[in-house]
Length: 251
Image (cartoon, rainbow, N blue to C red; front, side, top):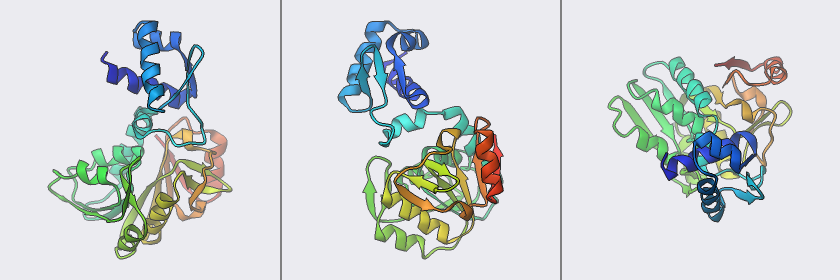
């Protein structure tokens, strides 16, 4: 396994567990302990993780993880969620979305469809550049480098000028009392602008987002018609969401 793949797997394990030991990683990745220690040291130097005695940990669960680490975390679940969301879209619809890692899995599944995509995510636009039947509107604004999404007044103004059939929104936290939240206020406002122009709102989020709360509020729980998550979502969370009027599908 090459270094880049090992780094991805290490970050994925951290995203799942919060902390992991050198010996565990060595066994998981079929690599020597010395190799894993070097990998951890390199990732620590970039602030992707925190090197600990005997292993590594997420620096601070209150801080947003690097995008590449988010991509690898719960990737099979995100792929199922994204594919299911894509299957619900209908040809000719105008769909608004950001560029979260679960949304990106939906984008990979729609390339043969005929749709109009409205997005503030540079990565979404690039992913669809060769999709012949998809028209992409990319908003302007200030780019947030961590996620390659553009935010700010220009972005929000563009979104408010377009009517959407569906807004597909990712969230870093979903809480019955606190609603849908994320780390960055600019991203929260952009998502809220999409929500305000949509006939329907779908939330895509793996089970790790359940019952979490982050600083920036996207919107209250009731704005969404549908939450698509995975089968590991806690039963009590699913019941509470359903009781609040949100249809929950687990895949």
